Length: 365
Image (cartoon, rainbow, N blue to C red; front, side, top):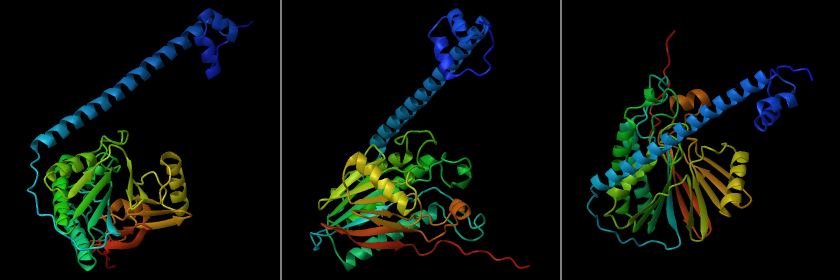
């Protein structure tokens, strides 16, 4: 057999090479022994570097987990829980409750009127103001129609983060640590205010994508989690505020026998077909439920089908440079307040903020 050089090694040829000696592989493949030897060295070199890359990624993940554990330990040690406030007695219906969808606060993000041509503005000061507006609107609804219990469904992206896209550092007015600390303080204060108007405030919160340490970090390497754990520590004395933060990216919540799936929604296409596929995939994983509650898309949407409803929450941000430029979306910031009962969602009330923060600038010729 005439020996030849293989210029394009296939997977099948590599398997023959690795299963035999260089001489035997050369005979079987009809190549020179030097070609077989050179290819084996290349494969070993690639395997070595792949092992180094895998080990590097593992060390990175271990370091992230260890860092999170140290921060959480520091939070538990340093956080001083706020004094207990009196628990109110509310005369309201026992077969209805409120459910507040809270997501996409993105505390720490900076949107300027200059960047958006006057269409939008957002920063930590506006974020704090809108959180206060949201609390005030919930309290006003409670005064109109008192109910004993408020369920707060946290659906992620409470912080802007710092490493999700390349230019993100240019769109921040707080670093990620201050986002978590100040954001946690503000959110805990909001829950304390709400606790003065409900016998029970029950928070179940999943995480978003913006708080992740970087694009390839696992879901739980996430500053959203840090913020919520800090808020939980600050709320420790408030007996009528219950906080649950699952260490995963979704949660099933059951009220009056009706199940609600909470997930951030960054893996769902914003369309009826996308919502339908999303709920069917989740049913295959976790079983039956009636509602999917998501955020992420910064655009309130409602999709329904046979036996399912998906409610997509808005954002506190409203339009940003990204949403305006890439999607031409620029509606007012809003959150969503549901009234729920044994038959599921009975009412959907949008909580719209006073302004999107700007108007387009017109230049004279």
